Amino acid sequence: MIKKSLKKSSTWLILLAIFFGGQAWINRDMASGTAPAIQAETLAGDSFHLDQLKGKPAIVYFWASWCGICRTMESSISELSQEKPLISIAMQSGDKQEVLNYTGKKALQTPVINDPSGQLSANYGIKGVPAVFILDKDGSIRYATSGYSPTWAIRARLWLAGR
Image 1: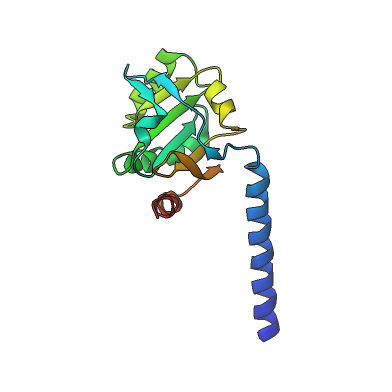
Image 2 (image 1 turned 90 degrees about the vertical axis):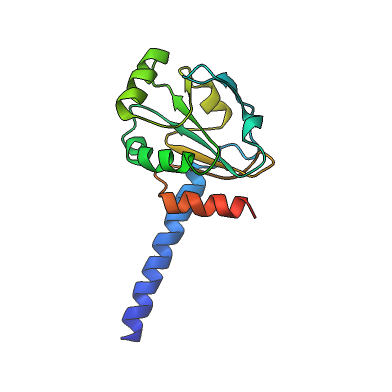
């Protein structure tokens, strides 16, 4: 019985090590330290500068209209945007009108910057979406992840960034 339990625990530890090792490998080129500058106009026509997020933990969220995983995170991101400063960036999702059409259909409540060329995404070292960057109150990247992130995991990272 003990051998079986030990074997099962060992298997889980190995799987966790593979998962977190894979995440580290995938995220290795993502920006760290001081967040790269973002100065752009949102789809709503508002001027945005990354400094607007300073003062408390914040989220920089990269997504794409063609990304299925991003669609599964839409409600979580909208919910988080009601609680914390957040800017979302539509990576290579078409021109302004195409992104406006998409966000209108989805009733997204987050401020959105269009990144049709992928330049902002490249500045952040993003290889795939969704990508979530958690900034501390000083605007430094504390956590970065790509792929699906559950709401509780983003909230935990925000909490840690605020400590």
